Image (cartoon, rainbow, N blue to C red; front, side):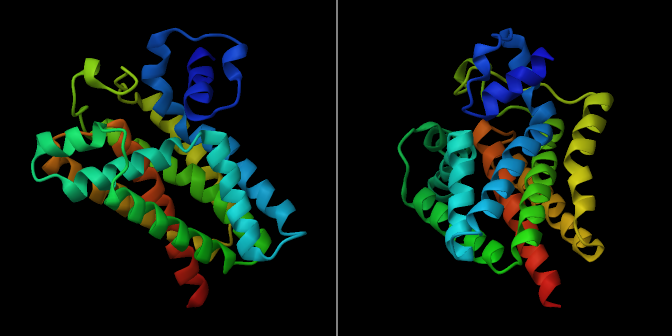
Length: 247
């Protein structure tokens, strides 16, 4: 329970810290519950979309829905993806990439990456029927977080623990926690039409491709890499859904 509470505190900006203050060790296991937190973040995003669509055009409703997720998470993953793009785009060596990613200032690659990401997300989701879009957002959030969470099982942390932004290095999953993470990530997929399930392959491919890239470029991962892997995996899921719909 303390580990799950730590995950809620870490991955959202809701005042769960008022309930209790989990020990620092619990934060090493927060990624185990990342897909479970997706039930909250994805659920809220989907609910806001459903409500906003009653009043606003689809594009506006989608923007409002994802803005609500930004508020809920404090743009945690977007900050990571911007740093990831800056590092990979501007760095020519492992040390330089890590240094750029640690810099709190956003650069050209980060800005462009976020703009392109949200242009694609808004365009893709607004092209779907509203109720289908709500289910796709919910399933995409949970499943993509599960796929992205595998980064801690395949790679070591790229920096020393003392150099981590939050001074925490995540521990790899046990068999039991992997299974729990998988169930939380996969169950929402079964709310979708059966032909849409093929899109679940996309986040798996993107996550593994990024893991291979990080192994080659960084010999490990950072927290920024986790955020980027989630968002890019989620984007690939939406691309897969829309592609299937158009066939």
